[in-house]
Image (tube, rainbow, N blue to C red):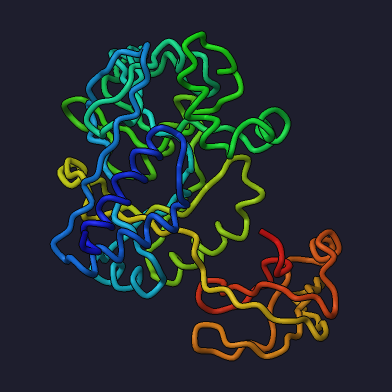
Length: 355
């Protein structure tokens, strides 16, 4: 077996396991396999699909193609993508849950379909109606589909499932298909996409998000951006604040502000991409502290043993605040992880031995 054949076999096996809510590798490891395969075989297109079918559920067709977004594996690759796709964009958090499409006719929820192969999935309508933030009745003039993720909040996972399930995503993917409908009250739905049947009245990403909120859905945090610097800053801030969000996120998504409905018909849209949370990180030791003043407020700045980070020697890094430092027991002599904030300001992320 050649290396190319080996990689294709591993990718197919991992995709199938992911679809069955029993992943055999991390997203990062999976992306590394795909990137290696694309390097060895530039003609390779990631079209691997999996069938998440569970006995007891009928299969149903998707109205929206549920494909995959192009992924940028580092800031350099994203910067290149950004330059090739100019214009105002909207960035949003990338939820790490189980994908589902909700179908509405005249404002009434008529069907809920799991991601499945991207073309068809399992009909979980009766279960979906019992999941928090799945809205059964919306604007009466709406016929079309709303797409999002079924998630489990970390607090719920830690209280009820930590010793039973591997992670929040696995728990959500498993429970949403309980044939007896049990435990569905422990799941949440977060919406991020809308597509109307026929004439399109929603033409912008921000308009879409506001419409979803108005209809009663929860949506991921988003921000309108126009420069690469703003995009990188949003990605880094999202990464640093991820523990403050109730559910798991694994990156950010970038979309053109003006919705390109023709592009969305592609299995991999050309004008959108995802950036995972794989920031440049270095480990070093704190040798002292200084203070940064902004008006009447002071913020701690860590003095570091010099360390190379993205081709730059870093000697100082910002910290959140003194309470944050105390909670993590970060002090002089601590080994810490340093990341770059928006490509410019180094920031202490936490102790080096923290996960």
